[in-house]
Length: 409
Image (cartoon, rainbow, N blue to C red):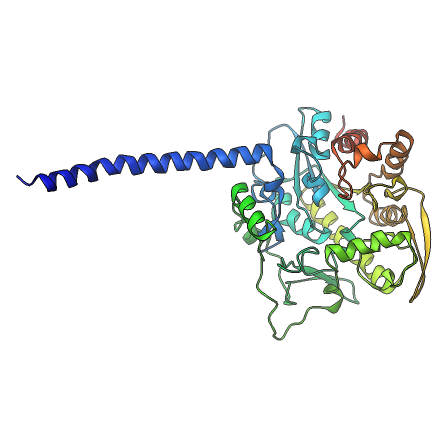
């Protein structure tokens, strides 16, 4: 009898259960880590991941199932960027859309398609991709004056110069129709159905690892722009880095030695004069809103345009969108002026021309912050320009009063 052979077989037979136990325990540990991260650090799941159709999107967008509808409930869909995605609050339930759902009660279902860094162009594409099939009764398009106007004149994420995340963009030609192009200048056809099938779940644990290894939770969504027959319109390649954009904000306190009115910056929406680039940005935005309005109506809903009362300077209540501050500057390219209520004035005019509902509580919000000296409470993490949970709740209360009549409540 070969005892060594018997011993080897015995060891091998004992190894199987041990390996199985190791795999099970490792899997349980990873799942526990994923669950813990999602509860303690939900912002990891809100970070943008590469998206072949939208440029980038977060887990909430990827997991959005438009066919899940709660019978008997009226549906409200929010479209937006980091503010509607929840950046600045600890839990998603603290952000404006969720608080609004809480205030409106059990008869209303509120959902969100929003990702940090999105522009109105990506929000429109996201609605075509998933929002329309959900058949919302109301669609709230939020507008962040700090960067939404500039984001639509770009073929990449504004803060990802070193590891660029490319995005599609729309060009408005002389005759007026919008034309969609890929990041490298190639014309694209809208195919939201095919794009929706390409979405997948992303792990918060992997996002954390990528963040610590590379300094970002995102990887390039496209290859470097190749040379070929197509070229990117030069107007869509001049968006600065995040640091460059903030330079425009910080230097507004001083005499400028450069010309924001001839660049693509975070102050674009506040410029009162109609410079060529600024005028073109607003025309593209209005054309996108008109397209979105048509798509919302086709899905059986109604569009609401809502400016977000963001702040250019998170330490100064006079720089909240809708405040009365105006300032004139002299630059190498001539004089120009900015006004905190300029975005609202233009948005109101667009809403009137397109005959869509306009929800603007910015001026009242700014006054409330000033009178209550709430700047530190609403923006506790300056220079981060995302406001906190109390600001979201205040806006939700004002939004409730606006949407209740539209819902027949």
